[in-house]
Amino acid sequence: MKHVVRIAPSPTGRLHIGTIRTAYHNWLIAKQNPESTFIVRIDDTDLERSKEELIQPIFDSLSKLGLDYDKTFRQSERFDRYIQVAKALINYGYAEEDDGCIRLLPDGILKSGFICEWEDEITGSKPSNSQIDEYSMSQVIIKSDGSPAYNFASVVDDYDEGVTWIVRGVDHISNTYKQALIFRLLDEVFLTKKGLPKFSHVGLVCHSSGKKLSKRDSDEINLEGVNSEALLNYVLRLGWSPKEDTKANNIIDKNKAIKLFLEEGNIKSSNAKIDLDKLDWYNKKYNNIMKPV
Image (cartoon, rainbow, N blue to C red; front, side, top):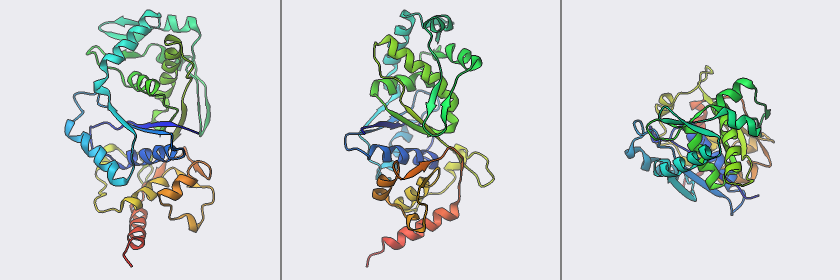
């Protein structure tokens, strides 16, 4: 099956271990079919925190890891498109201007019967409730400074690019209710029947204590000198395991991972604990494998 997948790093820090894992999972899905597309979207709508000098290192890191991509773009270049879509929602009675911003309009959405529920490919049905609906149906989509809200920009991009499968961390589950609603609204406004993409939310990368690994924590993990193949083998196992988890599957290079990832493996929703000793073990194994004879 052909897939369109993406990763969406923000240029507010270097490409850390959690984003590397997300990139690899999506890259592996794209590699199931030569007609699939792997997109790198730079989420730089936060103009105050985004740093121009951090954008190229993202692509340098992906190249070093051998994770080739088919297309890239920056959200900051698409502000006109976000405004255009927001105005279309206003024209249909699904949004309104309010104190300088644009927000969704619950009355119009409720009359049309749109819902926020969605399905997770890992953990199943995610039904909405009145509290989720109220929060989602009144969300701001364009801020007072003219920049798009995260959930709105993300959906407009995914809708325009025809993204078919979104794989990311479980910390995005609450966002997905709001995004599912926007996807449905765009199908109505633009008279399409794309429907929702598939969603898979994988567990977070955590400390050995179980505490969520923050971006600062991840940035402090020194990956300099780590064999690229060893790093990918390591992050692959953070939230995924082969169905036959034998000693023979300790070492899974990229070619083997492509074969195993979907049909002979399981993505997990439980959190994965960082183990730098294990990363060191993989590094030594790959360095020995790659030694010249």
